[in-house]
Every structure is written in C-alpha cells, then in structure tokens.
Image (cartoon, rainbow over all chains, first blue to last red; front, side):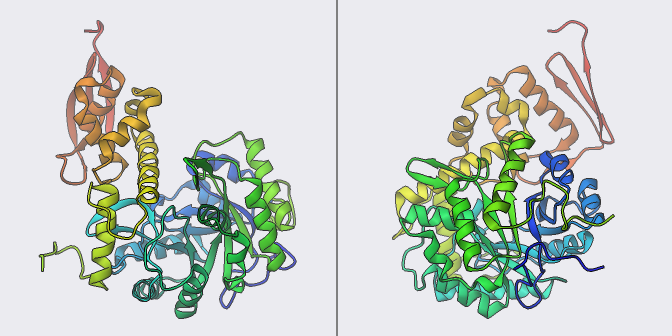
Length: 296
Length: 157
C-alpha cells in the first residue's frame, strides 16, 4: 500500500528524491522512548557513527519495522576535507542505510580533520573553486558507494575563510549541480549564519535550489558573547520558526526534523516544539495519530 | 616535502590540505592563526568546540566531570585547549591521569574501573583486557572477560 504524502505539497524532493517525510525528530538514546511514543512520526535520523552494525539499537529497529523512515546522518566523513574520503567510512554509511532500510543518507558540507588532527566538530570550507573540486570528488566517491541518494547539509559557522570566490548560494548551487546530490537545508544554520553576518536569512533562501531539498533541520541555539551558537540544546527560537514559514511559503520541503542534542526538556515541551514546527510549516502534527502514521 | 604516515592517503589538493591543517592546528593545537581569518571569530569557534568536547567527555566520564561541579567545562577547556581531541573516551582518560592526585574517590574509582576493563598506554586506542585487578578507593575492581565487580573492604581506609 502506498503511503499518503505527509503534506499536500510534499512530492519528491527531486529526481530520486525520498518523497514526503512529514515532521520528524532526531533519534538519540536519551530520548528513545519519547521518539518511539510519537504516534504520527513519519521519519527520524540517527547519527551514523553511533550505530554499531552488530547490534543496532532495538528501539530504532522497532521504528523501522513500523514504517518510520530512518535517515543515517554522518558527521565524520569530512566531505570537504582535502584528503580523499575514507572508504571504510563510506562503507559504514552504506551498511547503515541497508540495515535501517533508509530512503537516503545525509552528511555535511564541511571538513572535520586535516593532517591527521581531528578538529572536534564540523568546520567550514573555503568558498573557492579548489574547495568545490575537492567536495565534488569526495561526494562522487561517497555516492558511488551508497545504495541510496545522498543529501548534503551546509553548516552553521562562526567564522569564514578569507578570499571567497563564490557567495554561499552560488557555491552550494554549483556543488549540487555538479554532483546531483540533494540538499539537507538546516533552517537554524541559515538563521545562525545570517544573524552572525548581519544578513537577511530569507535572502539566502532565494538563492538556493529549493526543489533539491530532501528535508530540513530545525534546532535551537543560544547567544553568547554577541554571537548566535547553534547548540541544539535550547528551544527553537521564534525567529527560526518564522524562517520555516518563509521557506514553506516559497516551497514546502518534503520533511522537517527537529534536532536536539542535550539538556533534554520534559516530553510536553518537546511535543510543543514539534507541534510548533508543524504549524509553521502547515503540516500535520506528529504528536497525535494521523494519516502519516505507519499502518498496523 | 615531508614524509606522510602510510595510513594517510595523498591529498586531493596539496595547497588546500596545508591550509586546512594550518587552521585546525591554530584551533586545536596552539598553532599560529593563518592570515586573513578573524581572530575573534575563530577563537569563538575553538571555544565552542572545547565546550562540546567537555560535554562529550562528561558523558563518557560522569564521575570525573561531577568532581569538578560547575567548573568542569572551564577545567577541561584549560587542559584541552592545545590538545586535539582523540575521542571522548581518551580525552577523559588522559585528563584523569593528568589530574589523578587531585581527584576525589568517585572519580578515582571510575578511572580504576576503566583501567581494569581496558589496556591503554596513552598513545593508541584502548583495547579490552581479558582479566585485570585494580585498586580502587576502599577496595578492588576485578574484571574477568568483560564482567566487572568492585569488591569493598569492610572498613574504609
């Protein structure tokens, strides 16, 4: 039986796209019970590097078996690193996709290590032709090893490289054109970068190929020392929800996923956040049984 | 040209590789900031990474972090500022060994239990031990094939 799309406008995200996903939340061990208890959940995401293929989390397999789409989300591939992407990391991502029946996988437009030193987090790449060439090569190598489409996510960055040859919109558009990758658009990252650069976040939305969006991230952050940090440990600010509305007015993405990575609030607060995202996007809430719920 | 360790492949772009390495060294290993970057912005990003590492390490080493109370993030960040991460397990382990003399009983027990479970020389990934006995405050930690018991003396010393 085919699933009804999660939203009226939620058709395929592009050629080979995953179709309507609806509203989701990132699966983390600390909130496994909460995620599993969402009756209308359409999709979730798991940090690929946290999955032991020998014994994947039972709760995650239960979600898969009830028809919730699971997206393995890599954080350590270092697609933007000047060294070739490690085949064993690609193989792990591919094996996660197979084991979880994933419709797609995702990673970042970033690098995480250089010269054998781990940076400890996602770092921005320079917006240059040389950097585009390296990203293109690494994304193609990754795609060649994957059984499903790859979506790439532009990151939130507190600094920029000097001597940029492209603006962010042109850089990402060319990358997607060269590789055929889908876009994982993090609305909170768009907000954070624009706020820290003193720019209008909605202006970037007009520069991106929104028809290539596979799904979106939404998250909260905090201001420290005059800079907005995308921490994933705070409630989603009103301004980010407003930007979700701006995005959906242009083109509604197939799915929107809340990322929370610490300082987990009571379940009622998480439910309210999911409902607020659904309302901002004009999508069905997942906190009550709905048409997008997996049929028994 | 400097020799590269055999496990690291040739970069796709040597110039970009060098630029990325210089930036990572500046952010994590006390290296000089490359030209053209905003020093305040890069320092804020480096500090955010130290905060994230402190949180990850606290999850892997809860007693260690708890022994510093609200001062954990600052204490860890001061120690880790010029030490690139080797993963939260090893970051906490290295920190605990470096501060062993100052640690309260719970944190010393946590370290002793880790030492009983794993063989870790400090320069390579820890490996599981089949059998080990380690002194912990007030008793012994005994580990056989992954099963661990802490045996307390009746009278605390």
